[in-house]
Image 1: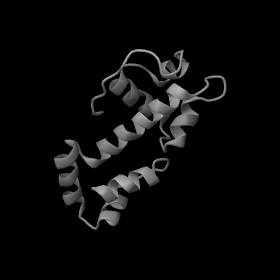
Image 2: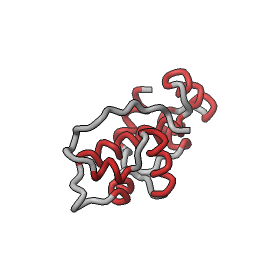
Image 3: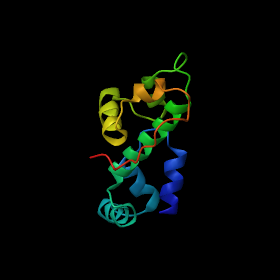
Image 4: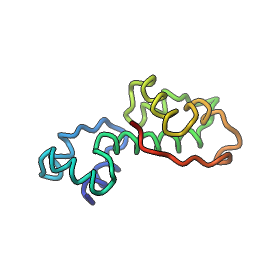
Length: 118
């Protein structure tokens, strides 16, 4: 799992397939799923997706809305389907990404307790 965490950090901004994780760990897809369920309580796809959404949220909270866009930030983290990302983001955080981007002051506001997407 330590190697997986390292790969997730290294490839945060790129799409990551299940096959890629299997390759770096040297385990089958079935074993990988079992490892994620045991460690995180969700499968690898959901875990990676949720992790990327958290990264997008952090970037949106710090971004200047006059210089950056939701889609630009989402693409920075390897999320190209902006509509799906916005839907998942809203389900996870209770607001749309644009609301996070536009909220002032940065870093202030109410706390959100996230649950896995899905």
